[in-house]
Image (cartoon, rainbow, N blue to C red; front, top):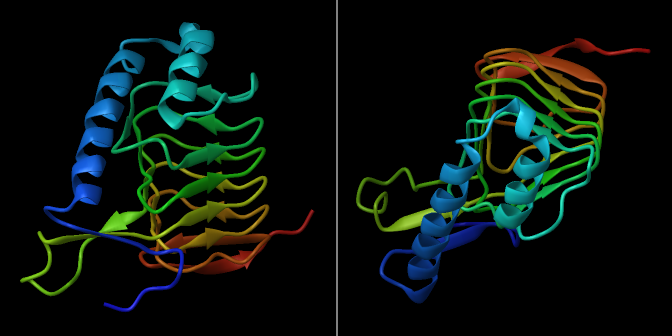
Length: 185
């Protein structure tokens, strides 16, 4: 199974897979508490999200529950990040979200997957990193797949499925997402 140095491969029934399962249980407990909160509980949401990712988030971070993840400890967020309701971040491969990013409702950011070969699907989990650069807007219902970088100042149109890198200063849309046009100031 080819992979680059940032791809994470976890085989079933190994100490690494057992640790992954324990981390999922930890994340489920934290997100269950987080998802009982409301928009008015921004400070408590920041505390729980900081606990989830293992580092303090900036006071400018805003998340509207519900929120779902299968780990959390591989998520890194910058300043002035907004995450709207009902988002799912599977972060096994690593998820870096830079400053000034806006993420719309129902967005899925999925770094984890499985091999195509039927005999390997349940035996292996593959994590590929996702990088969302500064000042990106990911609109409602978009899905971003592992191994992708979304370039600075770009917009991912609503409902898009991003399977390849997004160049900086572009609008992408569709399934699979393609460049629609440049974004100029």
